Length: 183
Ligand SMILES: [Fe+2]
Image 1 (tube, rainbow, N blue to C red):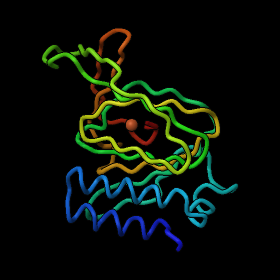
Image 2 (cartoon, rainbow, N blue to C red):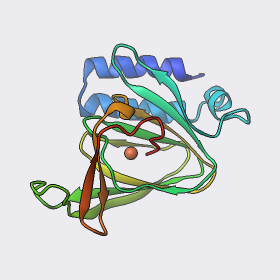
Image 3 (cartoon, rainbow, N blue to C red):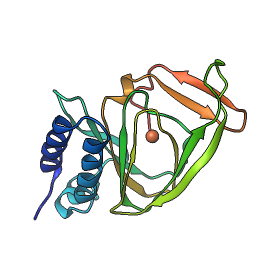
């Protein structure tokens, strides 16, 4: 049975209305794994006519979650980052994304300082979706031609978040990332 963007967004609303915590978000992640293998959805959002780069494909006016499609011609390695107060789920459509989940070891009391260690690394292949809770720190690494869907609980362009540099044990706070935000 076809499972397109509108069905996915209805299921997100239902799941998050019933449980706005981790259980509801896990339902969103599972629904995302249905969406990213739907042929109609893929043809519509990731077909030959799809624009390169990041495109917002849905924004829920009441609950505030935002769905983006990424058609990435160039490879990218992001720095470790959180999503502010938001959760995020990433669903792979084409190629892959190597995910690194980081653990923060310091007490976050010293401004600009953060000690990160790698907690987990795994690859998202097409049809797989990963979930990141509010405050989780991750980095992403994908090759040219990677295509994926990201859903966040709120508009990340307006969210204050942290970007980390594990080589220098530093962190910076980014107030507004704007529409160029890619991770
Ligand atoms: Fe992210």
